[in-house]
Length: 172
Length: 172
DNA sequence: GCCCTCATGTAATAAGTTACATGATTGA
DNA sequence: TCAATCATGTAACTTATTACATGAGGGC
Image 1: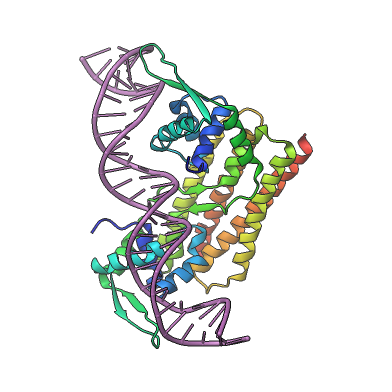
Image 2: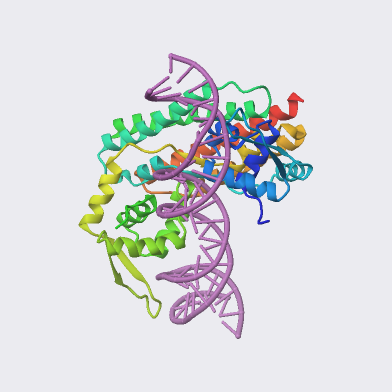
């Protein structure tokens, strides 16, 4: 099997958290890891197939009434692969893709008010994410720890962009 | 021409900042926008070709001695395309891909010391980026404003991960 | 002579998004 | 009955990385 990629571990990790189907995994991803690692159905379903072929997970039909459904669980090999990956603290550099910062970087040609609008929009988006994270109430443990980090993070960004907006408006 | 993507605007924006060749653009990208928008040679050179075909930039041979080189500049259409894009403050959500947070999210199975090591590694990487940004000294203007944001950002992250590491070690 | 930097480009691959296609169940 | 949700999957496309290939100039 070609090597595992981060998406493989998202699937493995979610199964260990007790999730069962591709659909379930996608639901949790969308309100948790997507803030730092997104995954689409177009990745999840093929990945489940790959992981099952590789023997890292085991799946069985689990229809709900006449509604099809396939439930998975980790195999011993899958547990081990996940643990090995988690134990390795040598992680590549975080990647950000932020169009707001990119526009601001090139905003010297813009009127101060337009540059400030960019900073404002960026700040509002972070505030929106913070508000979404506030609604979540994960159980004690690392999922909660990471959510708290995300909350602080997006609040900090919202505030810092607000400050940038303010500076941009007064400087000129 | 198929629509412009963010990488197109990186090229356009860099040309307006006075950069001339694909090589030059890559050098500046690597010490500026890469912290929030990376671009490789494999994107930049084909993109220059596309943009020239679309009439947004104009290139001419500009050899340095016997060393080949092609220098570009924005056309009026290119300037306009860049300005239109900058003026639009409706920006998609920031995307982060952070393997450190992903591992921490799944770290409940780990010993507290191992989870702490993950937080420590993440914090150190942010501290490293902050140190790199400190070495930079961009001119007054938005490139400097964005660099200052990056500096505060990575310092904040470094500190917050250090705090997480500390909490992880004492809680258990 | 050798290594580093300047300089441009392509090919193969990997990763990820979006749109599409299908169909059952639940609740208003 | 109608919309939302549950549920799975594929195909086409876009995006981005990596490795490769090539070659000149400058400094030691």
